[in-house]
Length: 313
Image 1 (cartoon, rainbow, N blue to C red):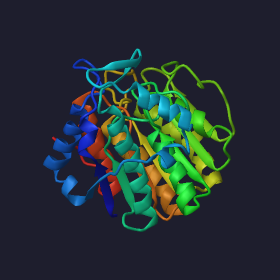
Image 2 (cartoon, one colour):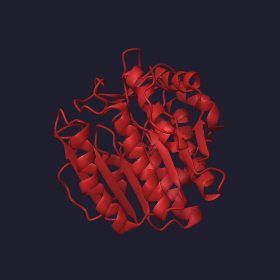
Image 3 (cartoon, rainbow, N blue to C red):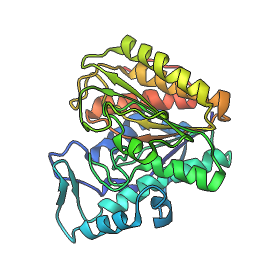
């Protein structure tokens, strides 16, 4: 497998204060671990470009985008909600995060790579069409999906989200869209408290109780996601790769291990091999324990590269 690894230096310029868990150190921890293991050197590394207004406006109204731009401070930090803040560089970082997913889509459709991991921040899956929230400004995976439709005529896009939180933003944007299948596993009941019980035919909600372990997680995914994916037959598989469902992550109370992220990534790749000519584009979402974030990302990348899972000492 040819795996592209996309990021951008601007992603670390965004910060929300010294105590905020969604910090620039997240990307540094991932890069350090992947470099040390030798995996990073096995990828095709590249920088993202900023997503332009046209790309963002496919999923976010222009009026909302302009309102967000007006919030950017000249200095310091401004608060959008209780956990989402903005510094002067935040939207620059958010544009390259969304732009990474666009470039990843380009790479898999142009056969420059089989799959792509976008190691970017800020995350995106809580960003609704007209609401920035949950550490998120633009919905990165949604921007990439809309780009795949507009530029490459993608007709059946599957978005698989295994973050500890449900992807309310992705659901908000694509609910009732028959050409996008959203599969989301998440701790229940839990933030973001919206869309948790709502049902649309193109959304597969997989709520997990606090304390859910590997066996229960895998059983739920096989029982609920696989039938939907085989029926849908996606021509592009996209992943919202949140690693805060790890047992060591402070954000939630699920008990997944590194190998579970390898397993679910491999499952996505099997679906892509069957129906999508191997096209998988993954984008980083959550993960706030720097050690488990790094080891989970390593497991994820091993799967994308087609390597076996082995514990790293």
